[in-house]
Length: 462
Image (cartoon, rainbow, N blue to C red; front, side, top):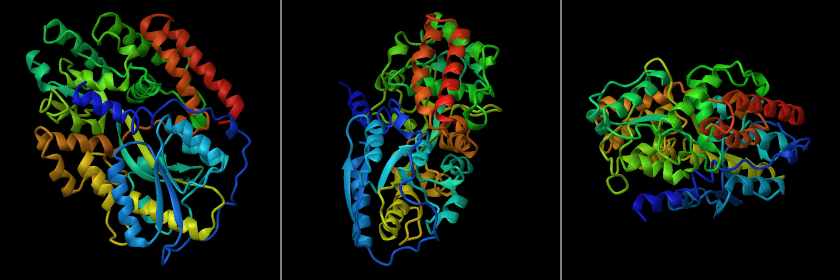
């Protein structure tokens, strides 16, 4: 097994496949009652520690997280029981929160907190002493993503673009197209046909068609529709697409790419590791990827395309959509003293540390792993630029492209801020491949997607 394969299998237990994993059933959220009365005056930062907090994470970089926890304990005198949850993190975490498990800080992706908050399973940050400062410094799209029903419900763990378009300059050079980047999806699909016609590679495009477990093809569907400015969901998650929508033609274009052999064979059954390893092996001209994976593709120890992968600039059209991880605080009936110490733990990880006044942990995430953050000051900092310049090809050209991706990213807020979004996304993961492989006509698939959303609104309301 290759080094990249081993790494990907490990990561599949953490940040990606399990963190993005199959949406848990949220039926228990409907009609749930708030456990702790919300509201109250802002809390002050505690003068001392003394509490024992429980923090649960998925399996991404546990040594780094453990080091940050030990620093917190030494500094503030608050003990933290840190645990790594193996397996299907979203489902397991949902069950723990539902069971009133005393969890003081957990990870989540931003399509889940709406359901958690409405069920009364998490506390908001409305009483956090640095709430207004943190909100002011957040990337606006990140602040909106983490605001549910008018309340800030978490601090950012990471923020990057899912579906950032990467190009292999080696393949483009062979096709005499280096630097001639597409501006739209129509131009992209025309160019991959030209690349194959010129003999540069047999499979020039690696799309987000992969299906493990649901986030590949469903996220690909959402982000391309957003980038094409095709409306999908309106206020309250109300579907605004139907069989007459331009999204039907989009799915038919996907089927053409598949039928013409422009994408790797078997892409509809790819696991996450297959998707990233295929791009890292070379021979693919363009692929939408997780923005922070660019560092992995630049590492000769894990990639056969090191030094050849660059981000495609946004020239009037976005590529990809916002993806946010969050630090949440569970609601298990804790009093103000424990809540304040939980806020301080979240501040240590997800904002300026109380002691130093600096973005210590966020900056370390960004510099060490290119896990960009929800704060512009971190992402545009000279420290991060210096770190990125060590591995990014032609950083003077490509770093501004990466920064532009996070300046004003598009986001699936109307869907993600519903209680039923994960259930619909799981359904879509089984429907969308039918439009690609021809099992169903694109119009039928789109009709089924709308009908499912309407039925979920009937159950959950929004």
